[in-house]
Length: 98
Image (cartoon, rainbow, N blue to C red; front, side, top):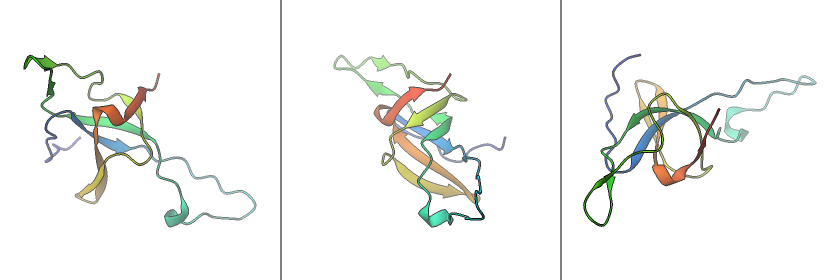
């Protein structure tokens, strides 16, 4: 994997959406613009972490390489070298898959 040029800060996490396998039934193909944004993603990079009230660092509950479910409308999409990534807050991660 190439070195990522984006380093999230704070409690933000850089994720890459996992593409759903396209199934064509009855000859109907759904255009990309009409498809829902996939909610499954892979954690690519972690931010610097958040601090609690006492100024102590709080560890992330996810790690690089985890497959996660993210909030449907959460995060900010960015494009780097023709690859789409999303930067989400750790709170927008709903769970870790398997």
